[in-house]
Length: 242
Figure (cartoon, rainbow, N blue to C red):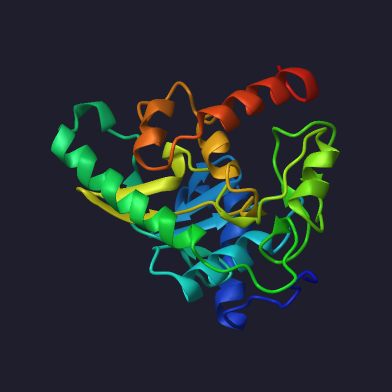
C-alpha cells in the first residue's frame, strides 16, 4: 500500500491560528497565552504538537480510526481537540468498580481497533503505508514498510507469518483520557501502524513502568501474551536496548 500523502487541512483561518499560537509560544511577551509543554502546546481544549521533524502519519492514523470505529480520537483541524485527563491521574485512589468500568471500555475500544480489516496489499508499516516509528527498535527510529510480518521479523532475527493488525503502539497511561469513569479519548497516534498481533501487548507492557497505571493493568485490557512478552525481553536484551 503506497504512503498516503493527502494533505490534511481545515482551511486558511485555522492554519493562521495555529501558526500564530506556535509563534506566540516562543515570544517572551505572549507565552502566557499557551501552557508550555515539551513538544506540545495547550490552549482552551486544543493541543498543538510542535516537532522539528514530523510526518502526517499520526494525523492519517487518527482519521482512519475515526472513520472505521467508534473509538474517541482527537478531531483534526491542523491541531487536535480532545477533552479529558490522563488516566494515570488519581488512579490509585479509584475504586475497583471504577477501574473495572474503565477496563471494560478500553477492551472494547482496542478490540474494535484491532478488528478493522487490513486493506488489500497492506504491509507492515504505518497506517498511511510508510515506515513506522518505534524507539525500542535497534539502530533506527523508522522501520519498514515490510511486505510481510515474516520480512519484519527477519529484520529482527525472528520469524512469524501472522497477519498485521491495526496497532496504536503506545497505550501509555498518558495517552488514555478519562472523565469520571468514562474513557473519552485515546491520543498520540504517532507510531500507530499495521503491526504483528503481539505488538500492542508487548509495547504496552514496556511503557511508563513508574506511573500509577502500571504494566499489570495492561493484562486487564489486552489479551495476555506471556510467550511473546518473554521473546520481546530476549529481543530487547540481545538486539535492542538493555
